[in-house]
Image 1: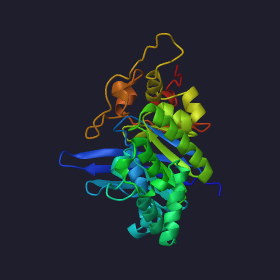
Image 2 (image 1 turned 60 degrees about the vertical axis):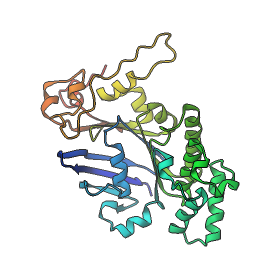
Image 3 (image 1 turned 135 degrees about the vertical axis):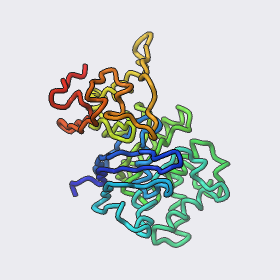
Length: 327
């Protein structure tokens, strides 16, 4: 099977609130092949988590509404499946690792029981088999099986995140969505957890979507990158393409925000302005109020996606006659 495991096309999600309609995701599309890791990058409010919740069938409704699009997972359109079918996929064939492990775990149940419950819900296992498998998964994430009957509050933040990873991998899913899985951890523990996720992904031959605002995390674990801004993907490509030859002014701005440890005095040049309010998105290209290379067309027309050798960009600079020089 050579086609993509996951293909998202023309996905639009809104939240209808008393203040107005929040356009969280706007005509988004990307694909993910088997065994690969895609980094979904962007600032808070870009629409990354809403994209993940759409794939999982967990957009809170109300106020959330998936207005259009297709999410093809292994040949099935997840948006067309009844909830009973999604329950067989969610947590089994597609798992999610959330940002804060303390709120992901039930404080009154032992960690072992929480893993074995996930197994019992999706696998044809006896209680004893599910318990044995759960203990084995704890060992896989470097937690002694003897801690099976301990509660979440008895673990450190890093250890709790390992428990969540064990739970996500327990049913050997085809796809894991990791939503900022290391944000709540200190830098040392973050590196350990990333290395663990990387090795387990290879061991289980799982595909992964890594949602993050940290380009360092992307460089560590991802094969491909999709950069999001105001609900749209503005640049896509392989890790090497995006990191060595970023095209979109927003992507280039993100890289300029990273300090260079090889320079004696590194000047960080932040992107001016803030992500626009999703209740009041600018006309044309949503990045144009912050863009140092804004043209008149950027203020009025949404750019089309252009792809060259697998490197895609949504920017008028690269449209015909746009003067694609990005120096």
